[in-house]
Image 1 (cartoon, helix red, strand yellow):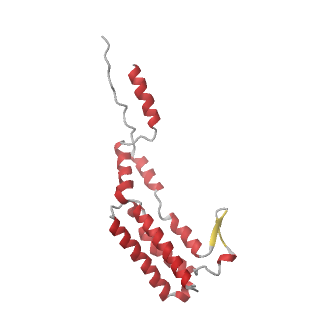
Image 2 (cartoon, helix red, strand yellow):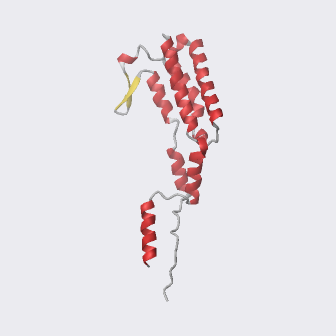
Image 3 (tube, one colour):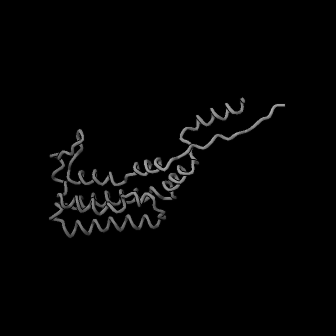
Length: 172
């Protein structure tokens, strides 16, 4: 008599260190450094930020770039990546941050090196876009769910391997 056992493949085990590794890879704050340097009219060349002469007439001062980058830091963090914000909250927060950037630019226009209204709009778009997109990433608990699934083993990054095991077990 032939017995047919249908064993489900064991889920991949996710160790706590894997979850920590995944958390370490979520770094929304890295864009802030890039934005800071771009506001200064710099470009990264061979791992170093270099001032581009052509861009210096439109660049903010170091104080301006620092203040704008610092304004975006609270929403560009791992804590925010793991949040549960709703669409309305995200939109309101991104708009509030970009309005604050506008007020800061208007109040400190000389210290920030603001020479025209186009720079105000440029700063607004950068701040709003970065804040909005960063806040949108965790919408629907995507990253939280991924981390939870990693801990419970509900995801398998190699489904083709799982299929091989299923075929092998069926053939037994």
